[in-house]
Image (cartoon, rainbow, N blue to C red; front, side, top):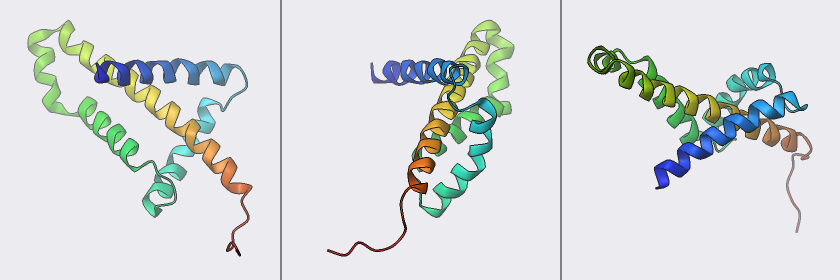
Length: 118
């Protein structure tokens, strides 16, 4: 059940992200341009997207992996369905995470660095 919820959440995020771009939200270009910044901020420990980036990297490796070619040879259409689901989930996750990162980045620019004095 929880796997189904995660999948439906990713598909919902994909639909919302695509609709948001059409309604004045971040464009697809802005989201894709944010990817390298998001990776850098995560690597520095500034942004908390480590696990989500790891899952997206694993999904990309799964789709690009030559080991996955074997089921397509024997299972034809069913072998392609798992790739289509994975690519759709990956697209939704990337769009949702970049939107989250852009919001985090915008909120961060309004914070004045320094120390809080009690």
